[in-house]
Length: 428
Image 1 (cartoon, rainbow, N blue to C red):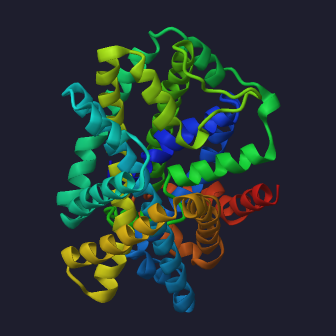
Image 2: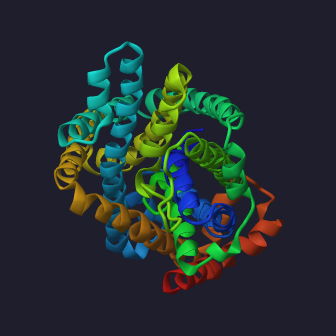
């Protein structure tokens, strides 16, 4: 549940619907599903297996897989840790906006309109304050440790997230205009298909499943040896993908409900307006047209978003924290304070230079760092790790795996097919 919580986050509820709405709806959904199951899921199995084999932080786990290249393994671990921290630095800003929208709706219900307007309006001071608030919340959970913090909160928050989703989708689909959004989401128009769409779908799959930043490696290290890793990976991928599909079922119909209520969502050329901040512009505008019911719906939606953001942010912070605790032999609370503080400072620098840095950091980490690091991890599992040791590790959770179809296909698939697919997509 914690690993699924790591995967289920703003990548699903903010990123996926935005990408789908900007790339033709159904055709992006289909491409994304293909990318998840032919590329992301096999590589998720690889990362979880490395983590459980090493039973340690990503640096040590990579060293155990690549004993002759300890310096190279350490460098890979540090790069993954840095990428995870940089993702959290922009993630905290977006999650802060969610807290602002949630608090703004609460204050509006209480009649405090001026305070609500300040919390929901873009400004340097507001962005800084809300980012710090979200980072403090993330640090509080991670400070509690794995079982008392991450696992406890993930197992509480994930079921709440699913219930809120069902309620919101059920409500939105009863509104005028929703069916038009549903058609865009479910009926493919292949004129939107392009190489850029495939690249976006691959990046979205990696970002959504937290691949390439060692988060799944860390959670793999916490798995018991009798866990069936391929089965666990498929469960995580299915739950993550189901949440992304549900987010599309919620957000795309909501866009057209907003359009029906007089909110502009497309420009004259048919391109989506405010694509990068879709859930912060179109949805609040839609909620505003619904009166008191809209305020309640807004509270529910942004509560759902905050839950999703938190289950992922705690995983991203756990990556550098796990490394520092084991490599530097430091107390968890001290490490969380230092690393969380450094990431907060980086986030503050992005806030002060939002126009030039925000998009750059997002692209650097999610479009380039995550897929490239994921590719390197696949090459390590496929070409460097001793095949017998890999088999022995997988057999601990599934003694019959050697005679299964999975073992006949997966090692060669990760070794050859995954790297070739990624290179083809990159060159395209």
